[in-house]
Length: 469
Image 1 (tube, rainbow, N blue to C red):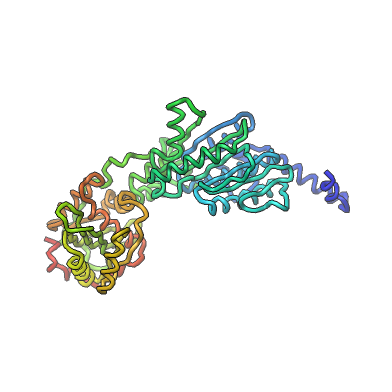
Image 2 (tube, one colour):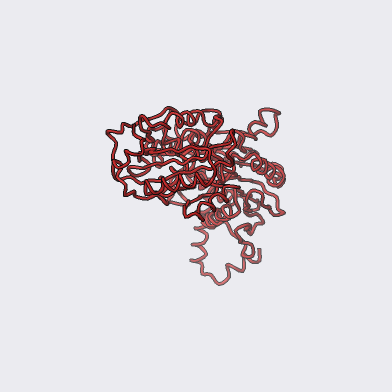
């Protein structure tokens, strides 16, 4: 109290009156529903009406403890809604603490900075001695804690816990070990900090059926555990686009084409599909007589076998050409070599393809393949590489989207076409998947325009290769 009186000393009555009026307006603004509070506090943001159920959560916790799960598509403003909700909560309850967690400490800390700015704008008074991004405190004793999943939350308890995107990406969400880690951290660290009568909100895009939302909602159904309420907000419903003013239907359809059905249904529709469903559907042929002949960018995707045993995988080199610009480009499979040969022979095959098509090879690699790539480079066959951090199913998503959209074409009469299509259609249950990874590697380079080359080869010069029938 004395410090408050000290801060008023020396001020004119006019200044004191202005401060009182600002405080009155700030207090009145904090009483607005969150849907109105967001644009009132931050005029550049419109009212998040499309996230009404999330905003309603922040109204309900004023009167009752709530444990809520929300599935929201990417790029739909969920984090801004959560941070504004936290700022309004602290303006109303300065003695309480909010704990905010996300997949990485760095991300959580960056959002903590935003939350701190919003809190100041909302009139929350902050202590000057604790304003770090992992912890900042109010003069009333409450505050904001920020941590990454698997990171520590300081010894304070919290009346409100916000978990925002606990899974970083599909590669991590597809890992059962990492999913176990997320759930373990949530139970042992996050929930252990929740005060009696406190509330929890978990918001993330869906990845797999067994992600954090999937696990918690399943537990509630199975054993009558904590009353987790689950709400899915799909990007497209019978009513149209979820956020038509910012993410209209045509934009969403473009996303669907580029992502593929597996990612689309999980990330944007909140309905993860089992992997058993076929990823590639149908096949699309082009007539060699009517094909374009110039203006291509070309890349060669490679996938390496570990041995030449009868049942081993194949070594594959696949030549892919792109005509036009992503995301509406068309792709032409020009050549496929699929063999079980020793590394020196496969090196010579790749070298010949690179020379014939004036293109560079690219591969996803891991483990023993590192040594194979070094062997190629010593032999003056340069292969660009990218570490295989995710499995083949995940890596195949982008090219599968283009394939299913009819934008990846294979030539009629090519001797390798039937086997290529068979493997793609049967993936991921087929015995071999080498051609899938080679196609994904070539497509990745062309889609990103990294390492692909504008080929000086005119495709009419390639008749001798025998790929056009």
